[in-house]
Structures are given as structure tokens and as C-alpha cells.
Length: 79
Image: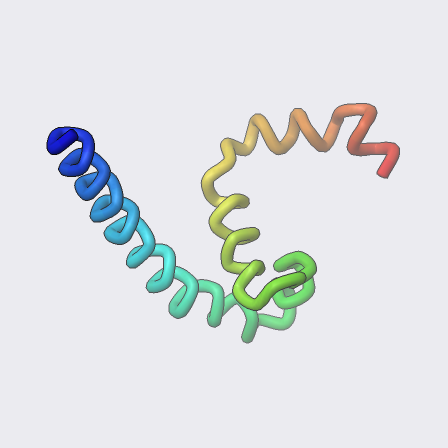
């Protein structure tokens, strides 16, 4: 049980450390994207406060080939 608890604590600390760059990214990069008139409307619909940060991170994390493949699919064209 002690091994499981220490492993759980280690994973929790890693998750907290992963959240810090996401917050910094949101404060710096997405703020600049919101100020730009060309990219302001391209950030996606914001259902929840800060959701546009998730949209930008997701767009940067996906490979371009995967997003092009999705855009050319029949399901995407129906929407």
C-alpha cells in the first residue's frame, strides 16, 4: 500500500507540474492571439472560460497530416 501511495503522490506532483506551462501558455500566447484581429475569431467557441486556450493547445499538438486527413473526410464535409 505504501508503494501505491507514493506512486500516486508522484503522479499527482507530475500533473501539477504539467499544469504550470499550460497556464503560462494561456496567459502569454493566447492573450496575443486574442489581440490580433485575424486570429480573434479563429480561436473557437468558448463554452467555458479558458476553453479557447485548450483549443489552441490542441491545434498545436495535433500533427498537420492528421488534421488534413480529418478535413478531407466525408464526415467533416457533412457538418
